[in-house]
Image (cartoon, rainbow, N blue to C red):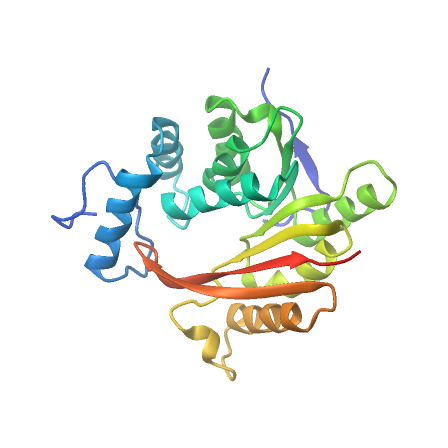
Length: 257
């Protein structure tokens, strides 16, 4: 449920035979081809090698009744690497869920870095807080509870007044209908070189449906067009396939202030 004001939550001081049983892949409602899921599981074991803290995050999420819509382990590691490659110190995430992607990105931050993550559901935020504290990164993460638009507006004011530094990397993974507005607000608190990543921009090819009555599809289409037309952005979008079915992400960099 949306709250009228953004609040801070402080830190506390598949059954397929070819998919290994230790895989973190939790297929969502739209499961991809078994071969694609098996490749995800192989990559996870051979390359990603997530620690036990990630399985603990997913276990608590399942126990808490949260939907299985977090990024895959390979996608999470991609986010971690993007934080490292970009040298980001200040990260903004829109859509916390149980803190799975938050944890991946927090691992890449130095001690002076931090993440602000926005979550509208108080139960999700509480599960995420427990997960992040248990994983030892809670001090790096500021969970803001409230509607994404209201939280982003508050952050814009913080950056404008100098109370907070501009963000170096932004990950948008909340309601897709809101992405165009979120991008507008994000562009008020970034700097040249800031990386902006948008998740779930293909949606099983639904992005092609110009006449769709799905507000998320229309939001994604507008979000992508805005990035392509924006004078301060260079952007692309990449399709993905795996345990999370056919989807993709957008990737943009801010080119000037």
